[in-house]
Length: 134
Image 1 (cartoon, rainbow, N blue to C red):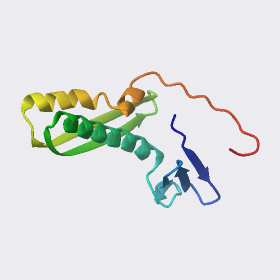
Image 2: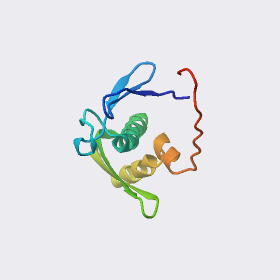
Image 3: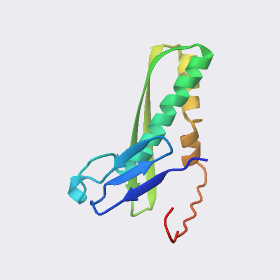
Image 4: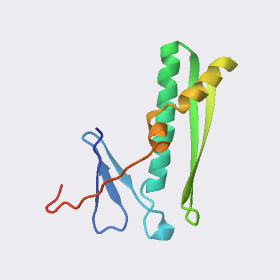
């Protein structure tokens, strides 16, 4: 189970996000009152998919012994508030000495990354109020 904690104080929208071993900052853009000190929450979601896709492809190619030099992933996340629908577009660039069959298999594997599976299956979020801190 992954546990991530977030903390925000009085500084508008600057949020410290921590795991047991890592810390990052999230913030909102200046046009909405933040200072743009880190990824905004939507960028963090897109980053999770792009990082997971990249790592999954790297692991698969390494296990197969394929000559995959680099993986580049671009993720665009759009939200249509009117339709209450989100749109994610992922573009994958594979650099290296790969034949068409390997490239096609890696495209299938991209859809097998754990974050892709989370985002494309039902999600249930339970929220509770904690009285005296976490």
